[in-house]
Amino acid sequence: MAKLTATQVQSYARTATVNKKYSDGNGLYFCVRVSGMPYWMLRYTSLNGRREATLGQYPSMTLAEARLESSKMQLQLS
Image 1 (spheres, helix red, strand yellow):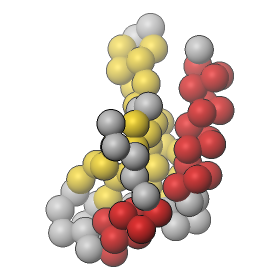
Image 2 (cartoon, rainbow, N blue to C red; image 1 turned 90 degrees about the horizontal axis):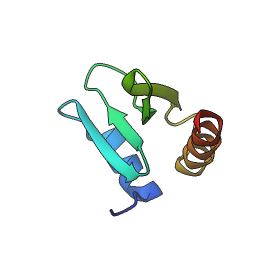
Image 3 (cartoon, rainbow, N blue to C red; image 1 turned 60 degrees about the vertical axis):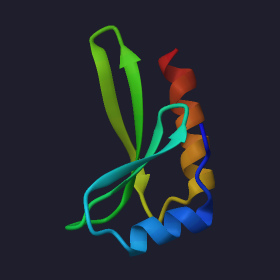
Image 4 (cartoon, rainbow, N blue to C red; image 1 turned 30 degrees about the vertical axis):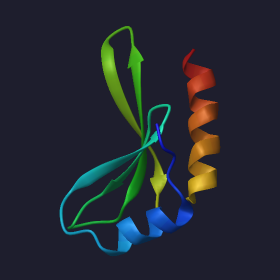
């Protein structure tokens, strides 16, 4: 699966016209909302099924920081 670039993330955040999720791979998503701030989300599977966790808001959390936080959280969950 293709990874996002910082330029793509900036463009998606700036030009949001619909609510959408963009995958970076390994369960990390960049979510944009027309009515609010874009944010980073991790999708994972637990004993209770598929779950989602918000990692932080963009631009205060960069793509690199979101990837690092996602990796840390996945290690904690495993």
